[in-house]
Amino acid sequence: MSDTTKAHSSVISEPLDHISVNEYSGGIIGPSREMLGPVRDGGKITTGTPPGCWGPMITPAFQGGHEVTLPVAVEGAEVGDAVALKITKMKVTSFATSSGVMEFVEGRYHGDPFVAKYCSECGTEHPASHVEGIGGDAIRCDVCGSEVSAFRFKNGYVIVLDEKNKVSLTVSQKIADKLAGTAGEMSNLPELSAQHSILALARADMPGVPAHMKPFLGNIGTTPSRDLPDSHNCADFGKFLVGAPHQYGVTKAELDDAKTDGHMDTNSVREGAILICPVKVKGAGIYMGDMHAQQGNGEIAGHATDVSGQTELTVEVIKNLTIEGPILLQNLEDLPEMARPMSKQQKECVKTLAAHWGQDYIEESAPITFVASGEHLNEATEIGLQRAARTTGLPYEEILNRATIAGSIEISRLPGVVRVTFMCPMTILDRMGIGHLVREKYDL
Image 1 (tube, rainbow, N blue to C red):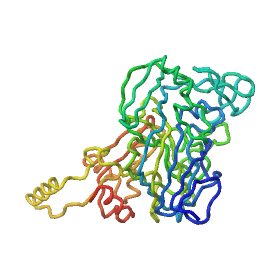
Image 2 (tube, rainbow, N blue to C red; image 1 turned 120 degrees about the vertical axis):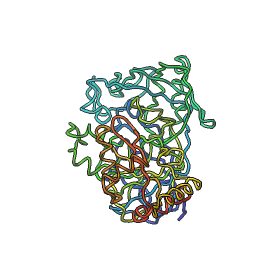
Image 3 (cartoon, one colour; image 1 turned 90 degrees about the vertical axis):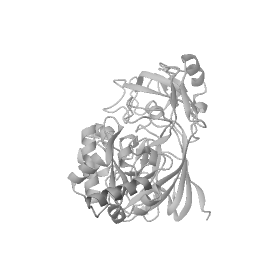
Image 4 (cartoon, rainbow, N blue to C red; image 1 turned 180 degrees about the vertical axis):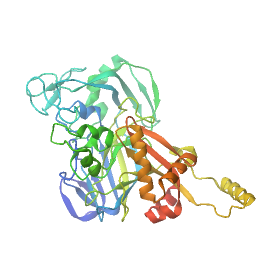
């Protein structure tokens, strides 16, 4: 058997060194989705992903707000383990995209427009649809021909992308209309993607704004222990599933137990970072999607620049590391200043300071980031701090102190995803089974 294969919807019994994924979830992730692979422990996964958010949002057949890859099983990954994803390459492949602030169209969904769309004219649930012309009424029901999107722009923009030079620019209505005529090509949708391109809506409210590009994946991780809409694998979006009037409705306890917090919109989950994810189903089920061309902390508009893109990562199973959500080893330049490893010169200064005062112990430590989601930022912060205490075994109050003087709390997404970063003793990181990853990442 070849050690490299293009994965299709069947599990291969012999672990492979490399799996290339080109099939997508249709909006749902969970145990019902058959896993591809397995990839061997230490192996590589590559994929080209379609945009998240706006494309699936305006495509009524989708039952989630993203279009992530089918999951890949990892050799030897059991419930109660963790899997480290070492992101080695990430590249934007769209030439343009569109985004903005959303509003819902009442009467076209049951409880949640991301999950339970229907045609208000003919009543068809999750109808097949097509693009007819350009503009806000371009998405049409295949059954009755009526305009059918459950979403509108309150304020939107079209942006062209220069991946090589990592710059971008919003464009005028005239250019947006022209791009809408070749929306699929400009989005560079993968062959098996089922979404409509958001470029077809051609909303251009703020032309001429230049912006840096810094691509990352907004939804990446492991399969939850029950079927969930892919965009709701987190607490702030997931709260709309609690008591929802559709088949994916859950209790809060069921959501908390099942989710893996893969939808975190954390802009430092990018090339070079290491993401350590909980395993809640046998094989882990690695999936990825929702690449953004850029985003500041917080995703303040509710949505950022969703693009097609290529990602490559390697996997490593961490046995017996039971975690509730992602742990992130960020790139050095992405770390908050107070949680960056000290230089050789700074360490010598600390030794001098210790000698002056008679302090005979200096801790060896390194940065670690816990990503957590909640219904709002205060709850997410508390959950992240509690997770850090439970995982490291450090007292909760000590986590508070470390995050204050040798760390930081940062917003990943409004309304409820945060990063809790602090300098953690190497003895604890070694006990967790990730000390070697930390030393490798920060050249310690």
